[in-house]
Length: 94
Image (tube, rainbow, N blue to C red):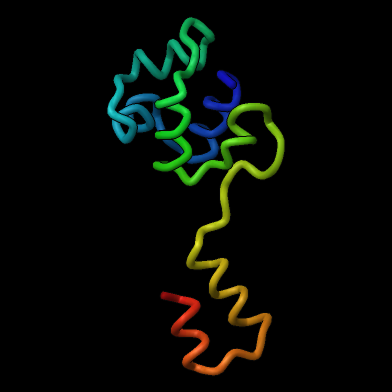
């Protein structure tokens, strides 16, 4: 998991400080995690997944896509794939 944190941070183009700040931890905490000196807690895993829209299975074991598809883009894809009337589109978006 520690390597995946570094891959994620680099993919997002964030410094350790920026990445940690969004999670409420310091740059040194992120450094310790990336370098394997500290393990991720369950709370930190959930925070990373929520804040950065990360696929938990990818974070834990490298399987699947790095990111979870955004709900808004998923709704737009459904609307474009299926002939929905305006009322159905509104209900789906809600």
